[in-house]
Length: 413
Image (cartoon, rainbow, N blue to C red):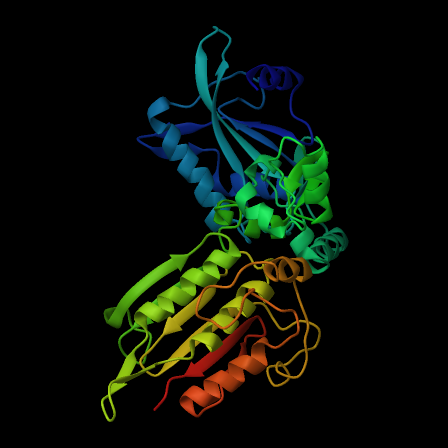
């Protein structure tokens, strides 16, 4: 990596390579300018990707380095720009490396690798794209074409899109194995050398970008132990409140539920089981009645992870428990002209591949189902039937700002 960087430095900046000097003072980053840095990162992401080296003069190509005690501060500064300044947030790989200066001294610098993004990113200066060795603001017609191009990538089989930064080695074979038919063992010494790659591609768990194998969105969400490493928004935020309103003073429990999607369903269901109220009577022996139907909660959670819009960066599924109700917020508008009133009458899948893979995952115990999904579209009818029998009231579906589906499930009076 070091030899390659030194060769690139000698050749100078181009469409995928940029240098910038770094000046710091007591941990504060004085240069480069924060807005300019955001524009450069967005320009790479809106183009074909690229590499930014911090600690190299862009005019002389001399390695200046970054003060060692300020290195972590610069890393945090870049990460904060990617997460909070750019809209939507940008995934970038930030590496600490050493390069030799003109006196053969090894100087610490930062290498920031920005992949071609699935989204169009806006920086404080507007919308930029990389042309040659400089960034250019996108004119309206080019911006419209870029939005159309990237939106098609997101909407059409988005769960089959490659996830930047993933590698085939990120697969967890114990998770992948459950999706293979006829007991095919990828780890078997008798398996043909290329059988695992072929099977992964047929399952659409593995794809490639720039000629290198990588994971698809569905493969990342179901076949890695920590999908949030690449998709930080793909989790369930669960909160329990003692009262009947959202108030941090009355919060009794909370958890960010991550991991593979089937694990998220099981752990979120466990959170509800642990926190929901139980009514007990002693008319003829002790009888307990939980606050919500576990079957209805399970079906709602499965639908949430299966059908949410994963292209909406910065959003997450929100699960809130109150004394009188359960609320579940799922990112994304309804697909294919569905409406809240027609959910129990029609079926439409936003993420066909994710649904297909979830249908092969085992369901948690106690929910009356062997597999996580059956693909017959029975989820919402079951939720309505179970919730009505439990509380005497139908659950309520509604859209929030045409971009989030809200499910309200009432507890018994």
